[in-house]
Structure formats: structure tokens, C-alpha cells
Length: 263
Image 1 (cartoon, one colour):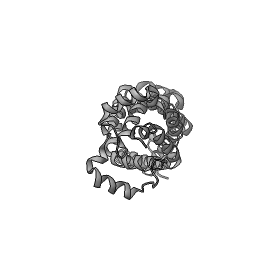
Image 2 (cartoon, rainbow, N blue to C red; image 1 turned 90 degrees about the vertical axis):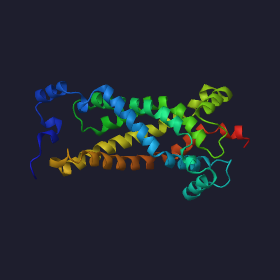
Image 3 (cartoon, rainbow, N blue to C red; image 1 turned 45 degrees about the vertical axis):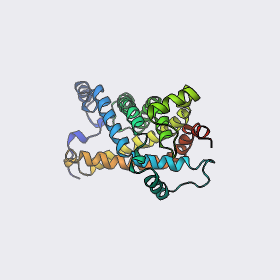
Image 4 (spheres, rainbow, N blue to C red; image 1 turned 90 degrees about the horizontal axis):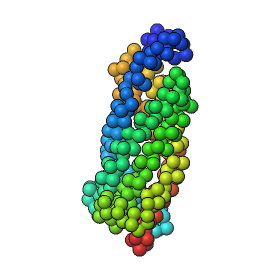
């Protein structure tokens, strides 16, 4: 096997004194805490806005499995129905709520994850248990920030939503259902996202490490490809595990809408 650069050696193979000195000389992963927050916030907004049409289709399909809708919509039917009745902009209804919530929530998510990973890894960055536990801690914190705006977003995404916009929806939910309505799905969201992030980050870190070890000499040149590939694999596996609870979350968040619509 070809010789590998020292930066790819496992930490436990490095001299203890030298490794401790290196840990003190640079911040975790080479950037500061506030940079994790900014990077996470930007990543979250880009992620949610770019995938928002898909999220709208998912919400419609999940909500239409309630007793209020006798015929659950399939993907093709939901897509064509939105385009025919609401136009392309119908796919983006509620995006303002997501934009308001995604930035702060992801800033919390990534910064808490990185700090928890730094603390729990105890000098061994190749620790899947630490990655999984860090993901759980991060999602509990970020869900507390995102859930209220996610509830508004979900309600605006529904077919024939009775709300005029983000402000109208938030005001009416608060007035008619109280503050608790914004957090009706919080426990379900945490129960869903805790295993999601545990699976996601453990798979992501393992995939990233495996991909970098395939070609360590070119790892720095292929860093974006490595992150994207590892992230796609991790996200797909995590979504497969947690989709049933995501359906429950959607229906909890939208349960007050049907009474408003007279259904």
C-alpha cells in the first residue's frame, strides 16, 4: 500500500504530546465557533430554498393521507395539480417562513454539532459514537428554533390554505390555537430527527473518511466531491429510517388547519 501523508494517520498513532499541542494551536476543523454558525446558517438557507418545491410536494402527499382527503395524492398527481391550479409559484408557498427559520436553526445546528463533536470525540475524530451523539444534541437545540416556523411553513404549503402569508398564519395560529400549537410537533420532531441526525452524521463521517482514504494524495483537490457524495449517502439512509415519523410530524403541525377550513 502506498505511503499515506501524516494528516491521514489516526490520532491514536500520533505522539500524544504532539497531538495535544496541535489541538491547542488550531481551532476544531481549522475554523472558529462563529464561522461554524455563519457557515451553517448559509448552508441551511441554501439547502431549504433549493429543495423547497420537493418539500412542498412531500407536505401535500403527507397531509393528504388524513381522513380529510379520501384519495391520497401520489407524486405525479400532486405536482401536476399544483402547477394546474396554482402555477409554479404554488411550489414556493411558505418559503418565507422557512427562510426565517432555517438560518438561525442551522446556525445553532452546525455550531452545536461541531462543539459537541470536539468535546465528545476526546481527541479521536474517527469516533462514530461521538458523531452520532453530537448529532442528537445538535438537533434537539436546532429543532427548538425551527419548529415554530416549520409549523407556519407546513400550513402555508397545504392545498387551499386559509392563510394569506407568513405573518397572517403566525398571528392566526397564536390567536386561535395559542403558543402551544407552534410546538405541537416538537417532541415528534425530536424523536424523528434524533435518529435521523445520528444515522446521518455517523454515515457522513464514515463515508467521508472512506472516500478520502481511497485517494489520500488528491483528497484536498476533491474535498467538495467527497463532502457532497458522503452527504448524499448519509441523507438518503437517514431519510429512509425516519420518513414514517415525518408523516406524523406533518399531520400534527397541520391538525388545526382542517377545523379552520371547515373540514
